[in-house]
Length: 471
Image 1 (cartoon, one colour):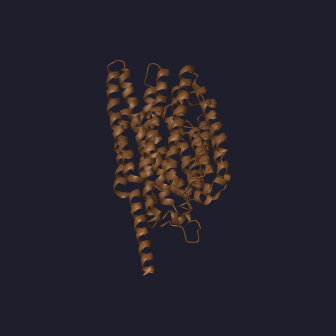
Image 2: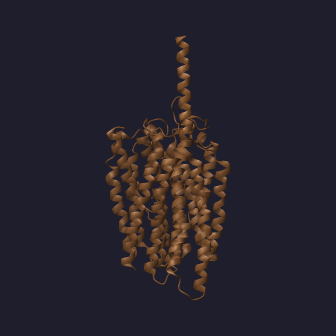
């Protein structure tokens, strides 16, 4: 591996660190939710409407954003512009929000713009990554990026939570961490040499650009896909890409997973933010929900990077998916216990609050595995098509609409039926994508031992051919 390539990979990791996970990094979406409810006295439904609009905007722009990234050679500039714009909109949200949602129309407008802009970030970072390391280097680099994303988010949210704790009730200052993080993104992004990005590889038109990454082989190298690129090395048409059965099944699963999981974290945060006698401590615990999850997501991303090439994508994906119904079932029980204690007129023990907080470990497993593996599975499916960013846009759009509907559904259930009932319904719903992946999705990656067997077989065939020539 050249020193130039190592430098580019290091810079990618630093960009990912300061970028943070999209929903909790520069946008600080979950922190915005808790801020608006606890400090600006928004209702759950008002917040649900705002972030429904945010998610719908992401959904509408996600696929076009992927197409733009596939078509453009200015990926670094596009990603930098998206980071700057979404940061400005995050700060503007905090500055202009009025109590009780008096200017809700303006806030909805900001979320429409922010949703569209943030749609450029996932295909931007991942296409640049694939352009630098190649499709066969994606497993380890995506895992490294995700580890840095989650670590960065934990630092961003911890900083914001501490600021909110010490400045309560005027906690809007916590969003100062967003422009600070954005400055880091721009600084390291601009240091990436454009010549280090192979734009054909970034599009998925090449599948073997990183000769050093030999721990796994893409399924497209050994299986036929409907979306395989023509022999003249031109990208597959978008219409042909959408005929790929595996892509369609995976897209539906992405939607269903986020439909059930997207609202769980905000609901857990809100049980702290609105349910404690000391709002400052409640807001700090809300921030800790994100921090605990992000720390364990780092470990999940590491495991995915180390073992998805050996064990395959499917086994790890299923571990992440089945962790969601388990988490919701535990939350149903714990929130029911908390409600009983409060109904009896007693104070909720701190130990119970900590146990509820500890359920975020399962979020670190579920969302952590999904965040890494969905990129790798998408890369597997798109390999050789020249449409990696477009394919990622399709799966990301499904995630966005799922998370959007989930956000409003969860807030409505919590307000109308209570948090405990909401968690039980989400538990049942989350079983659907887990079972669908179990029975409908194929393994998209050929494991390392299978690759070695193929290589040995090829070497034996070559040796036999040479012996025949000698005879």
